[in-house]
Image (cartoon, rainbow, N blue to C red; front, side, top):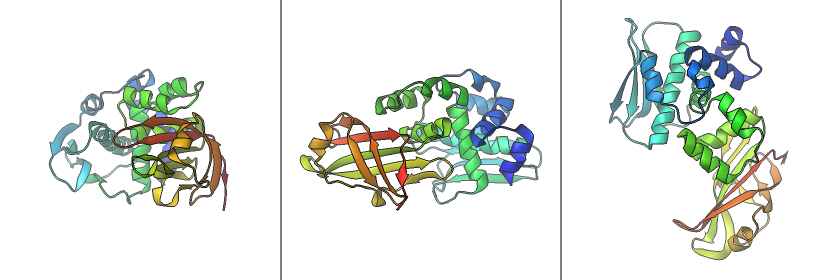
Amino acid sequence: MLVDALFSKFGGENEVELCHLCARQYFGELETIDRAVDVRALVKSAGIAIRESNAGKFEGMFEWDNSGKETITLARSGSENRRRFTAAHELGHWLLRQTVLKGAAGVRYRSNDRGRASEEERLANLLAAEILMPLPAMMRLLSFQKITNRLVRQLSGRFGVSRQAFLRRIPQILNTTLIYLNVVPNRFKDATSHAIVDEAIYIVPGEGPFSDRDNVRLIRRISFAELLRQSSPSLGVKTSHGNLFATFDALAYNEPIPNADLLAVDVRFRVL
């Protein structure tokens, strides 16, 4: 297995530390960075050519030939945060090729198909998270603060990543469970109607992230307006992983429709 080969080469207490040690060997500047890294500069410093494509079949591609020429291709579509993560993901493939994947000419794609989840793809994602949100900076910024929606918004902007990517990074750093919900009124702009889950991410260390809106709901029926009258609502949530009960940090918005972000860390699931 690739991860076993990496542990043999770099050591580390867990996969997060392992990816940090791997990335540090080639990009030592990540040790002290505390804001958005220039991913393209890292790509070029590694001697990799970078180009863009209008092809819609993939988000990114890393390829190399028998002469040693290496190229990362990025799709022109997508948000800047998404393109940055894709570039870092392809750089993760490059790191794996430098360390444990040797061989002849080849190619790796970052597909639009979210179903691809091979060991190499998973490690490339972990390395991308390390490149964009380095372990030392994350430890300094997260270890002694209450994790709130405002902090997530602030730090995701500071590091040039999406909110979803930052949310996924938090449990990796703190080794804790996390649940994020975006809730809206059932009747769109009618805040007196009951709150329903529009987006859900919950993460259990060792089991991976779950994005499962269709199977996540609030256990107790509560109006959207009543929910927002509480700055820290205590709620029960039913998921396909089990039920959980937590006190959430809440942050409300009015556009494009009334909605609210709910965030809780270090929650405990009651398995069904």
